[in-house]
Image (cartoon, rainbow, N blue to C red; front, side, top):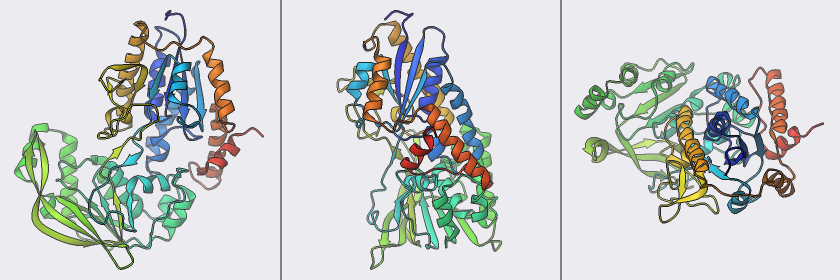
Length: 461
């Protein structure tokens, strides 16, 4: 296609990867580009709005840069539009030169153990989405009369869940936690929270700032077991080999927790390592009453350090379990999907078909491209790689060939299919309403948590 002709790109998913991709495309000067950003929900920001913990407001400041992207010429936002319902992948291919999918990893991985579906056993993703006000999960219920809770996993999401359960209602009331979650947590009976890691402290996925924060909670003691924090030879070698100051500090923080004794705070947050759940044990009513654990030891395997079960077991009394053992993408009708990896098959962001060859005009970025790894900022270079692929393919004339007037046609088509379309101006009205309600309560924002409420707030008076 001629370099002077605008390159029209549809980006599916308005989370960090989608905005980083739009930014890279719109900020380059080699050729004119327009970006239409589609989002299933009426509101943008994806993981930043629905995944970042409410007591981590500073992390959400990245949305200011996303707002600047939305202000660039050539950007349009189509909120409350679901691909597969309001538009198909084939229809997108008929209206754009390139279609990029940045839909993240929306579902959880299962532990695959007996009792996993007992009442009181939940994916951590659902709890996070619930307290963050995601419309799909705002009506979930969690039995917070439970006194003992196990969080399986030691990634940052698991740490977030443990920390939110350990916060006081007054601490949470200063955040943008969803109103329904705040009210439920006000009546929480949780006294003990266990974070369970299958490997050792060195291999734990949480960051040093995250684990350090656990030791600063107003009404919860952060503790660990000395025998589980002590490093085995493999972990010592890994720590020396990587020579990472942050990792060393993480181990020091955990050693400090292991040396602590309870100070009498109302709650205890206990970090456990080298243990794996093998069964959830239920009571006569079918509710979780304990978690059976196996003790692990570390071995070298395939160039890394793996956990291997021993013959030592224990039963941990718990009433509520959240699993946070990995996440996976969700298939989109009309798009190839790797069921095993939970991602869209691709090479450097170019979506590939069954034969491994790139499919013209289809791209992926973010977690749906590479799997759930890294932090929010990791998506920036990842999206940059995909943007480079799109621009290189445009220069080589290997993109799709939509009609010249597709920009107007697709807007008309979406408006016909989805009368409750939310554009960027409507989102700004939603955001203003949330900010005003939050200010009145001394909070950053008071989130709207139902789609109908969002759509109503987005309409002009």
